Length: 134
Image (cartoon, rainbow, N blue to C red; front, top):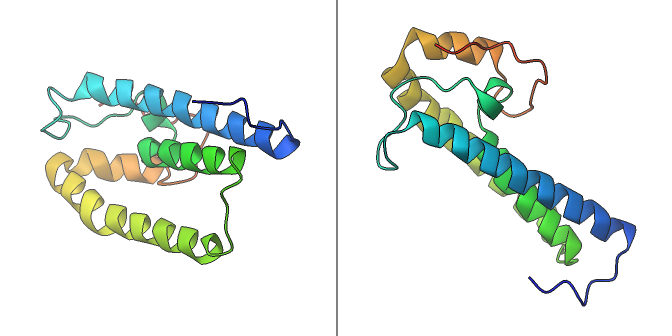
């Protein structure tokens, strides 16, 4: 990535920090997921409640979003249209997770997932881990 043309204003610094946090959380989430999945074709055979999954149910989506927001801020790519495009994308991702992923996960993991859903929030991380490995 060529950073030489970036003037380091406060918005750029904030963007870099957000992107780096997103990258770090994505790597953390992917490594936690890799420990629970025998291969990338299959869903986890057991409930993942360690690492970032102890704080939020969808850390990969949040991390990827942070990277996009951070880099878009660094490069000053925000446009007026983003004020309605971003919320639409967020709503579409939310409905995909709620109506496709969560029901399939519940079918696969049963009551353990129900207990996990009660203790771990979907989108806004709770920074006191209350889930336990099952």
